[in-house]
Image (cartoon, rainbow, N blue to C red):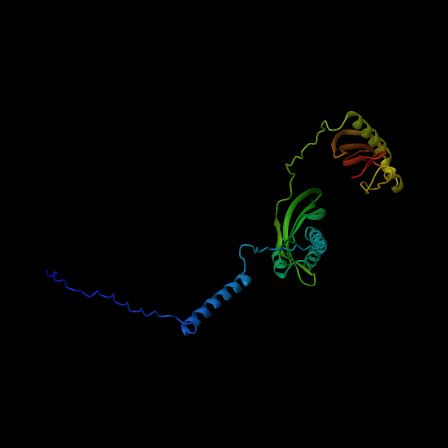
Length: 303
Protein backbone atom coordinates (compact mmCIF):
# COMPACT_ATOMS: atom_id res chain seq x y z
CA UNK A 1 0.00 0.00 0.00
CA UNK A 2 1.40 3.29 -1.00
CA UNK A 3 1.47 6.02 1.47
CA UNK A 4 -0.12 9.21 0.38
CA UNK A 5 2.18 11.78 -0.97
CA UNK A 6 3.17 14.22 1.69
CA UNK A 7 4.64 17.40 0.44
CA UNK A 8 7.45 18.53 2.62
CA UNK A 9 7.59 22.19 3.52
CA UNK A 10 10.58 23.86 4.91
CA UNK A 11 9.79 25.75 8.08
CA UNK A 12 10.24 29.41 7.38
CA UNK A 13 12.83 31.07 9.63
CA UNK A 14 11.84 34.39 11.16
CA UNK A 15 13.49 37.35 9.58
CA UNK A 16 16.06 39.17 11.64
CA UNK A 17 15.04 42.69 12.57
CA UNK A 18 17.37 45.34 11.42
CA UNK A 19 18.94 47.33 14.21
CA UNK A 20 17.66 50.90 14.37
CA UNK A 21 20.24 53.56 14.35
CA UNK A 22 19.94 55.73 17.46
CA UNK A 23 21.47 59.14 17.31
CA UNK A 24 23.10 60.07 20.59
CA UNK A 25 23.99 63.53 21.57
CA UNK A 26 27.39 63.55 22.99
CA UNK A 27 28.34 65.68 25.98
CA UNK A 28 31.09 67.27 24.05
CA UNK A 29 28.91 68.66 21.33
CA UNK A 30 29.19 72.46 20.96
CA UNK A 31 25.41 72.98 21.03
CA UNK A 32 25.10 71.21 24.38
CA UNK A 33 27.91 73.24 25.87
CA UNK A 34 26.20 76.43 24.67
CA UNK A 35 22.90 75.40 26.26
CA UNK A 36 24.57 74.59 29.57
CA UNK A 37 26.37 77.89 29.56
CA UNK A 38 23.12 79.72 28.80
CA UNK A 39 21.30 77.89 31.60
CA UNK A 40 23.99 78.56 34.18
CA UNK A 41 24.24 82.20 33.13
CA UNK A 42 20.50 82.67 33.49
CA UNK A 43 20.55 81.07 36.93
CA UNK A 44 23.46 83.22 38.09
CA UNK A 45 21.81 86.39 36.77
CA UNK A 46 18.57 85.54 38.55
CA UNK A 47 20.37 85.02 41.86
CA UNK A 48 22.23 88.32 41.40
CA UNK A 49 19.02 90.23 40.68
CA UNK A 50 17.37 88.67 43.70
CA UNK A 51 20.03 90.09 46.00
CA UNK A 52 20.44 93.47 44.35
CA UNK A 53 16.90 94.38 43.30
CA UNK A 54 15.02 97.11 45.27
CA UNK A 55 11.99 95.74 47.04
CA UNK A 56 9.44 98.41 46.09
CA UNK A 57 6.95 97.06 48.61
CA UNK A 58 9.15 97.68 51.64
CA UNK A 59 10.87 100.91 50.65
CA UNK A 60 8.91 103.91 51.89
CA UNK A 61 9.82 107.47 51.11
CA UNK A 62 9.40 109.87 54.01
CA UNK A 63 9.40 113.62 53.65
CA UNK A 64 10.93 115.38 56.61
CA UNK A 65 10.01 119.03 57.04
CA UNK A 66 12.46 120.80 59.29
CA UNK A 67 10.96 123.67 61.23
CA UNK A 68 13.11 126.65 62.06
CA UNK A 69 12.58 129.34 64.66
CA UNK A 70 12.59 132.89 63.35
CA UNK A 71 13.51 135.69 65.75
CA UNK A 72 10.89 138.36 65.10
CA UNK A 73 12.06 140.77 67.80
CA UNK A 74 13.69 143.14 65.30
CA UNK A 75 10.65 143.01 63.01
CA UNK A 76 8.28 143.90 65.87
CA UNK A 77 10.47 146.77 67.05
CA UNK A 78 10.82 148.05 63.48
CA UNK A 79 7.03 147.90 63.07
CA UNK A 80 6.34 149.75 66.32
CA UNK A 81 8.74 152.56 65.40
CA UNK A 82 7.20 152.82 61.93
CA UNK A 83 3.64 152.94 63.25
CA UNK A 84 4.53 155.69 65.73
CA UNK A 85 6.12 157.84 63.02
CA UNK A 86 3.59 157.03 60.29
CA UNK A 87 0.46 157.84 62.32
CA UNK A 88 1.82 160.90 64.12
CA UNK A 89 1.55 164.37 62.54
CA UNK A 90 0.82 168.00 63.26
CA UNK A 91 -0.83 170.50 60.95
CA UNK A 92 2.41 172.48 60.71
CA UNK A 93 4.67 172.51 57.66
CA UNK A 94 7.89 171.88 59.59
CA UNK A 95 6.38 168.94 61.49
CA UNK A 96 5.05 167.46 58.24
CA UNK A 97 8.46 167.76 56.59
CA UNK A 98 10.09 166.06 59.57
CA UNK A 99 7.54 163.23 59.33
CA UNK A 100 8.24 162.75 55.62
CA UNK A 101 11.96 162.57 56.35
CA UNK A 102 11.45 159.96 59.07
CA UNK A 103 9.47 157.70 56.74
CA UNK A 104 12.49 157.34 54.45
CA UNK A 105 13.95 155.08 57.18
CA UNK A 106 11.11 152.57 56.68
CA UNK A 107 9.63 152.67 53.17
CA UNK A 108 10.93 151.80 49.73
CA UNK A 109 11.31 154.75 47.37
CA UNK A 110 8.14 153.73 45.54
CA UNK A 111 6.14 153.77 48.78
CA UNK A 112 7.65 157.10 49.81
CA UNK A 113 6.29 158.60 46.61
CA UNK A 114 2.94 156.89 47.11
CA UNK A 115 2.56 158.37 50.61
CA UNK A 116 3.34 161.94 49.61
CA UNK A 117 -0.34 162.88 49.57
CA UNK A 118 -1.35 160.95 52.71
CA UNK A 119 -0.97 163.98 54.96
CA UNK A 120 -1.51 167.19 53.00
CA UNK A 121 0.00 170.52 53.97
CA UNK A 122 -3.48 171.94 54.61
CA UNK A 123 -4.62 169.02 56.76
CA UNK A 124 -6.82 170.37 59.62
CA UNK A 125 -6.03 167.60 62.11
CA UNK A 126 -3.17 166.48 64.30
CA UNK A 127 -2.59 162.88 65.32
CA UNK A 128 -0.73 161.10 68.13
CA UNK A 129 -0.39 157.38 68.67
CA UNK A 130 -1.96 156.14 71.92
CA UNK A 131 -1.47 152.38 71.61
CA UNK A 132 0.01 149.75 69.27
CA UNK A 133 -0.89 146.04 69.24
CA UNK A 134 1.03 143.65 67.03
CA UNK A 135 -1.16 140.60 66.43
CA UNK A 136 0.99 138.44 64.17
CA UNK A 137 4.28 138.17 62.29
CA UNK A 138 4.03 135.58 59.52
CA UNK A 139 6.79 134.47 57.17
CA UNK A 140 5.14 134.62 53.75
CA UNK A 141 8.27 133.77 51.73
CA UNK A 142 11.99 133.63 52.30
CA UNK A 143 13.01 136.82 54.15
CA UNK A 144 9.53 138.29 53.62
CA UNK A 145 7.14 138.82 56.54
CA UNK A 146 3.55 139.93 56.89
CA UNK A 147 2.78 141.93 60.04
CA UNK A 148 -0.74 142.61 61.33
CA UNK A 149 -1.15 145.39 63.88
CA UNK A 150 -3.77 147.67 65.41
CA UNK A 151 -3.09 151.34 66.09
CA UNK A 152 -5.11 153.65 68.33
CA UNK A 153 -4.82 157.34 67.41
CA UNK A 154 -5.90 160.49 69.17
CA UNK A 155 -7.16 162.88 66.51
CA UNK A 156 -7.32 166.57 67.40
CA UNK A 157 -9.09 169.21 65.32
CA UNK A 158 -9.36 172.71 66.73
CA UNK A 159 -10.47 172.15 70.34
CA UNK A 160 -12.04 168.75 69.77
CA UNK A 161 -10.32 165.39 70.09
CA UNK A 162 -11.38 161.78 69.67
CA UNK A 163 -9.89 158.29 69.61
CA UNK A 164 -9.91 156.10 66.51
CA UNK A 165 -8.67 152.55 66.14
CA UNK A 166 -7.94 150.51 63.01
CA UNK A 167 -6.07 147.36 62.01
CA UNK A 168 -3.60 147.14 59.12
CA UNK A 169 -1.26 144.71 57.43
CA UNK A 170 2.19 145.51 56.03
CA UNK A 171 4.88 143.43 54.34
CA UNK A 172 8.50 143.71 55.47
CA UNK A 173 11.61 142.39 53.75
CA UNK A 174 14.67 141.42 55.81
CA UNK A 175 18.00 140.99 53.99
CA UNK A 176 20.98 138.81 54.94
CA UNK A 177 22.39 141.60 57.12
CA UNK A 178 19.01 141.70 58.96
CA UNK A 179 18.22 145.15 57.60
CA UNK A 180 14.51 145.83 57.13
CA UNK A 181 12.34 147.69 54.65
CA UNK A 182 8.56 147.92 54.16
CA UNK A 183 7.53 146.75 50.69
CA UNK A 184 3.74 146.95 51.01
CA UNK A 185 1.88 149.99 52.30
CA UNK A 186 -0.39 149.72 55.38
CA UNK A 187 -3.49 147.93 54.13
CA UNK A 188 -6.78 147.68 56.03
CA UNK A 189 -7.09 144.33 57.79
CA UNK A 190 -9.28 142.60 60.36
CA UNK A 191 -8.33 142.32 64.01
CA UNK A 192 -8.77 139.15 66.08
CA UNK A 193 -12.18 138.85 67.72
CA UNK A 194 -13.41 136.96 70.73
CA UNK A 195 -13.64 133.21 70.08
CA UNK A 196 -16.88 131.29 70.62
CA UNK A 197 -14.95 128.41 72.22
CA UNK A 198 -16.41 127.16 75.51
CA UNK A 199 -14.10 124.86 77.51
CA UNK A 200 -15.53 121.63 78.86
CA UNK A 201 -16.68 121.99 82.44
CA UNK A 202 -15.10 119.56 84.90
CA UNK A 203 -17.40 118.00 87.47
CA UNK A 204 -16.78 116.03 90.65
CA UNK A 205 -17.50 112.32 90.47
CA UNK A 206 -18.05 109.68 93.12
CA UNK A 207 -14.43 108.49 93.00
CA UNK A 208 -13.42 110.72 95.95
CA UNK A 209 -14.83 109.83 99.35
CA UNK A 210 -16.37 112.57 101.46
CA UNK A 211 -13.69 112.10 104.11
CA UNK A 212 -10.91 112.50 101.54
CA UNK A 213 -12.54 115.58 100.01
CA UNK A 214 -12.76 117.15 103.49
CA UNK A 215 -9.06 116.44 104.18
CA UNK A 216 -7.98 117.91 100.84
CA UNK A 217 -10.16 121.00 101.32
CA UNK A 218 -8.65 121.68 104.75
CA UNK A 219 -5.14 121.20 103.35
CA UNK A 220 -5.77 123.61 100.48
CA UNK A 221 -7.28 126.26 102.77
CA UNK A 222 -4.20 126.07 105.00
CA UNK A 223 -1.84 126.15 102.05
CA UNK A 224 -3.44 129.04 100.14
CA UNK A 225 -3.70 131.12 103.32
CA UNK A 226 0.11 131.07 103.62
CA UNK A 227 1.01 130.73 99.93
CA UNK A 228 1.20 134.44 98.89
CA UNK A 229 3.97 135.23 101.41
CA UNK A 230 5.58 131.77 101.64
CA UNK A 231 9.32 131.48 100.96
CA UNK A 232 10.91 128.72 98.93
CA UNK A 233 11.89 126.85 102.13
CA UNK A 234 8.35 127.09 103.47
CA UNK A 235 6.83 125.80 100.23
CA UNK A 236 8.65 122.46 100.44
CA UNK A 237 6.23 121.41 103.21
CA UNK A 238 3.32 121.71 100.77
CA UNK A 239 4.67 121.48 97.23
CA UNK A 240 6.88 119.00 95.33
CA UNK A 241 8.70 119.27 91.99
CA UNK A 242 8.38 123.10 91.92
CA UNK A 243 4.73 122.64 91.01
CA UNK A 244 3.96 126.20 92.15
CA UNK A 245 6.29 129.21 92.11
CA UNK A 246 7.15 131.59 94.92
CA UNK A 247 5.06 134.78 94.48
CA UNK A 248 5.68 136.88 97.64
CA UNK A 249 2.65 139.15 97.25
CA UNK A 250 0.55 140.96 99.83
CA UNK A 251 -2.65 139.00 99.33
CA UNK A 252 -5.14 138.01 101.99
CA UNK A 253 -6.83 134.63 101.54
CA UNK A 254 -10.62 134.71 101.48
CA UNK A 255 -12.05 131.36 100.33
CA UNK A 256 -11.97 128.42 97.93
CA UNK A 257 -14.66 128.69 95.26
CA UNK A 258 -16.32 125.56 93.83
CA UNK A 259 -13.51 123.01 94.25
CA UNK A 260 -13.89 119.94 92.04
CA UNK A 261 -12.30 116.60 93.05
CA UNK A 262 -11.50 113.49 91.04
CA UNK A 263 -9.42 110.50 92.15
CA UNK A 264 -6.91 109.12 89.63
CA UNK A 265 -4.47 106.30 90.46
CA UNK A 266 -4.16 107.00 94.20
CA UNK A 267 -3.93 110.70 93.49
CA UNK A 268 -6.54 113.44 93.80
CA UNK A 269 -7.02 115.93 90.98
CA UNK A 270 -8.41 119.30 92.05
CA UNK A 271 -9.82 122.20 90.02
CA UNK A 272 -10.33 125.24 92.23
CA UNK A 273 -10.67 129.04 92.18
CA UNK A 274 -8.92 130.82 95.06
CA UNK A 275 -10.28 134.19 96.17
CA UNK A 276 -7.81 136.74 97.52
CA UNK A 277 -7.95 140.40 98.49
CA UNK A 278 -5.11 142.38 96.94
CA UNK A 279 -3.98 144.68 99.72
CA UNK A 280 -2.21 147.00 97.28
CA UNK A 281 -5.13 147.69 94.95
CA UNK A 282 -7.93 146.70 97.33
CA UNK A 283 -9.41 144.66 94.47
CA UNK A 284 -10.44 141.02 94.57
CA UNK A 285 -7.99 138.64 92.89
CA UNK A 286 -9.33 135.30 91.61
CA UNK A 287 -6.70 132.69 90.77
CA UNK A 288 -7.63 129.39 89.11
CA UNK A 289 -5.59 126.26 89.71
CA UNK A 290 -5.53 122.70 88.38
CA UNK A 291 -3.59 120.63 90.92
CA UNK A 292 -2.61 117.03 91.53
CA UNK A 293 -2.29 115.96 95.17
CA UNK A 294 -0.76 112.85 96.67
CA UNK A 295 -0.73 111.64 100.26
CA UNK A 296 2.36 110.17 101.87
CA UNK A 297 2.45 111.15 105.52
CA UNK A 298 0.65 114.37 104.69
CA UNK A 299 -0.98 115.73 101.54
CA UNK A 300 1.41 117.26 99.01
CA UNK A 301 0.87 119.18 95.77
CA UNK A 302 2.95 117.29 93.20
CA UNK A 303 1.76 118.89 89.97
